[in-house]
Structures are given as C-alpha cells and as structure tokens.
Length: 196
Length: 315
Image (tube, helix red, strand yellow):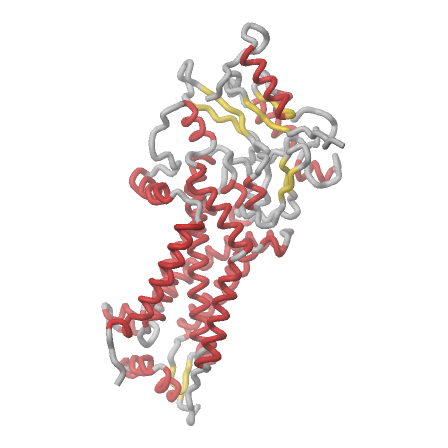
C-alpha cells in the first residue's frame, strides 16, 4: 500500500509583485483580532523610494519543515501538523522567548501585557489553522484566531493580497505557480525566475 | 614548617584556570556551533559604531540586503549555538551539578567537617552587622528564587509548561531587577581586598571582616563578573522587548546576550555551589553565625583567625 501524500503547506511572497500595501498585515490583524503591538505578518521593504530597486516582502511564520522554534522550545509547546503547518499550544507556553532567538524570520511575537511590561505568551501566524483547542470554538478563536483552513479557505493574508504576490498552499502547487509566472511571459502574471 | 612555593600559594588559581581552560577547550573546540570570529567582532562593532543590527560589512547584493533587513544578518553565526545550548541545558546540565555534588560528597567523606572546640560559648564576638546580614540573607533569598525560576525555564520539559511555569518565568525577570541593588551591595560588602586600598572608618564598617583565601577570592571574582554579566544581559534582553518592526535590528544582540546569560548562569551556579559547601557544610557554626551575627571567640580563634584579628584591630 502506498503512503498517503499529504500537502506541505507553505507561503511564498513574490517580491516582484508585492507593493508594500500592507493589506495582508491589516487583513491578518482584523481577522484574528490580533492585539496592538503584535504583528503576525509584516512587510519589509529595502531601497525604499528608489525607482527600480525597491523590493518588498511580506513575512510571517514560514512554517519550517525542520522548525528551529520547535527544537528550542523548553516546554515543547510546538507541534507540526501532517500538512506541515507549525502550531503551538498557548496553555503550555511560558513566554520565555527562546523561539524568537531561534527563528530566522522573527515570527514569534510577544504581547507586553504583564506587570512592568513582562512578556506574555507567544503569538504567531497559524496559517489560519487555529490551535489545539476544539476547531472553531470560542476558546480557539480567543487564543489563536480564525481557523479558516478547517473551513477549506485560504489564509486571510493571501486571500486579500491584491497583486497576488502572496501565495499559499501545497508547496508543489506554489512552486508550479511561480514556475508558470516565470516562464509564461506575456500571459497572465509574469515575474522573474529568480528571487532577490 | 609548611613550604611556601609559588605553586602551593597559588594552586587554587592554577587549578581553576586549568579546569576552566580544559572545559572551555572541549566546548569551544568540539561542541559549540558558533562563528567565533563573528562572536568577537560583533560586540566591538556595537561598541564602536552603536549599530546593533549585526551587519558587519555592507551587503553586496539585493539578496543580502533583503536578508539583513528582513531577518537580520548571519543567522548561522549565533542562533544554532542557542538551539544547541538550550537542548544541552535541558538534557545534560544537571549532570554537571550531580558531578559537583559527588565531589563534595567525596570531600566530606575524606575531610569531614571542621568543628571548633568551644568551651566558653557565652564569650561571643560580633562579626556581621545587621546591614551585613540583611545584604547576605536577601542575596540568598533572591538568588535562590532566581535559580528556581531560571531552572523552571531551562528544565521546562519537566514541568511541561502551564500557568505556574509561566508565572515563575515572568517572576524571573522581576527578580533579576530586584537582585541588581542586592548584587551591588554584596559586591561592596564582600570586597575584602579593598582594605588594601581603603582603610577608613567607612570601609571598616562596610566591608566584611577577614581576608580572602585564594578560593574565596575566586568565588568573589566570579560572583562579581558573572553577576554583572547576568544582570546586564538579562535586563537588556528584557528591555529590548521583541517588536514586529525592530526584529532584524536587535535580534542578533539579543541572541548574543542570551548566550552570555547562559554561560554566566552556569559558571556562577558552579561556584556558588562551591561557596555553599565550603561555608555551610564544610564548617560547622556558620549558619548560626549568619543568623545572629555573632560567633564564639574560640570558634574564630580556631577557624577564622583573620576575622578575629580584623575585629580586634578595629577596636
């Protein structure tokens, strides 16, 4: 019997198309009611204002296959779903911040909600897949935000991206879209075949 | 008469340096995943330029520029060591303490406990003032709490996280802030070698009586340097609260400081355990002395003549 083939969910931001509109950031914050001071997604721009050289990139948790946050977490609060989405259990999290030190992308976010501004429990992009609580329950929404994946929907950031720079889905599908954009000059969206 | 060669006078320093050198050699050479060139250049770059981003040379491509702006540069220079060290602390660090306790058990079995023969217990001498005792006991209480809350993070796998572990973790930061003035007071009070430089009424009142043995001096130096490292790194990490938009500007500094925090905590713990053994276990009578502030004169004559000499000189 052959093994079932699961999707491996990934984000990809096509920097040729990202226009630094921050629509993804706003959509994410609004959809998940993310508190002020926490940005699960952010847009980084270099060479701002220099025509032809400005590049923007929308970033969040990249849901690494070999996630360093999971390796470093002292209370083992991270878990990786079969489809590759990296999630964490806020009931276990102690807010130590080790995941932030290990993450190459600065994805883990910490609310400053304790006495004297101590760190709260970690918050990060869930790829709109909620958390370990009951699916689409109020508890899940309060801790992790919407669970759009369970409803068969695309994560909010990618669904709101006006230029379709931000792609999400099975990594092979995302790679196929990028390949199509690179080779299909003159048809539909066309971007360069290489990155930065 | 005991011979006084360079080696016998300085063997505590020599063995400590050899021990630390050996452990350092094994760790640096074979275990740590650190870019040591970057590790040395980075703090100099921060001090000389005030730039904490960790970009030591200008990017030569858009790719490099984007990586620097988006993620912070040179991920592979410090972060892998943070991951390795975290796991190592979780899995193996307690063996260091087991080994140290085993050494103490061996020393206790071989050398026993020093006990003074006291025939006149009512003839007591005031050694610690109320200020000394307050500083010492507050340090003991706060350091104990810091150890418990710190190991709560290190050994989080044992607790499995949750609200109590979260409370203890957040207490660690607050306790660190509380410890800052206490560490400073202890550094002043225990700076016995300062008597060589200052010999006035204030220093006589403020600084603890007696003089350091070589091992005592090493413990004091470790306490001061590692305490300063822990406080500076811990408070700076806390102050540089992670922010979505400043990540790449500070993350390398935070990684660096966390590494310093890791190293300093292990070293200070090792020597503090040594101190606790040599003061509380190896010699009888110190606990009572630390509570009341007084010691029988005969105890001091037999076990701490330097302290008695200091007190009598003051009179």
